Image 1 (tube, rainbow, N blue to C red):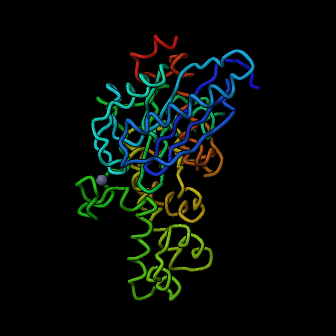
Image 2: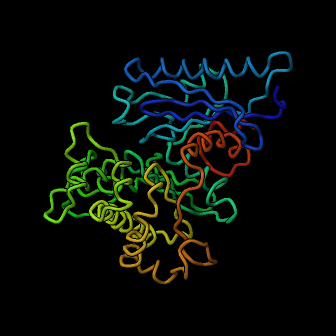
Image 3: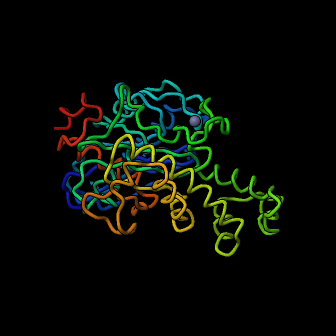
Length: 352
Ligand SMILES: [Zn+2]
């Protein structure tokens, strides 16, 4: 039995799995359903599965009482997305879904207002309102998500920065190595090629090729069953070659963050995603590169890196973990009512 206050649904659409969460007004998770994203079945089929999940929770929590009152649905999707039209762009992890009108399709099936954001923006909103930014009262920040790739969300003056069509904030494709590795986006030397989980694997393989690599790192990268970023992190606790791999990642991440700070002078940069678990392994090199490459940071360098200081740039790990994307999606309808941000402005009057 739930309190029949206004609830929200959050959806975290991923290339492998999709989660649907029901949240109460204080953003506590009431229930969550996970499903495999059947990419090859097509986007309409996936939308219908999501709608079934929503419908079943609606039925379950309305049983024996008044129907639950739902403020709306927020969905975080891999980008790029045209947030003006709610139509998906060219998505490497969701082949065949290009140009699908995700927002309108979900609104049609569920008959509820739907707010769409990129998954990275949704995570940034959650960290801003309920995570690392919660106690700061800051109205501007950036979140960089280090996962399989590198995502980011930018918040300026209390609004998510979308750019012209909703594709703003692709920090993962900022150049950190001119003439560097060829990226899937067609450019070279993108941050994503070095600071993501896949980037770490590439750095580890390159490090294992060097003459001074430890036998343990060489053995890890050549073993028949493959290796993961977690394996490199475990090895790094007492292996100098694996530690250097994380220093390398931190260096490139620091250059990317230095560019962000030089251009935007943001007071808060939050680093999240699976790789953020290895913060202690890459943070020293990251801070060094930020200082080396950012004049603006040097002018506002904190006296200590792990406590936020007034009028100093604070760079810290995310606090919400893997639930940030789902939580941020569920926050969207609530923030839209407060008119805190301008996502899908055409739908806001329907919610109010
Ligand atoms: Zn790129």
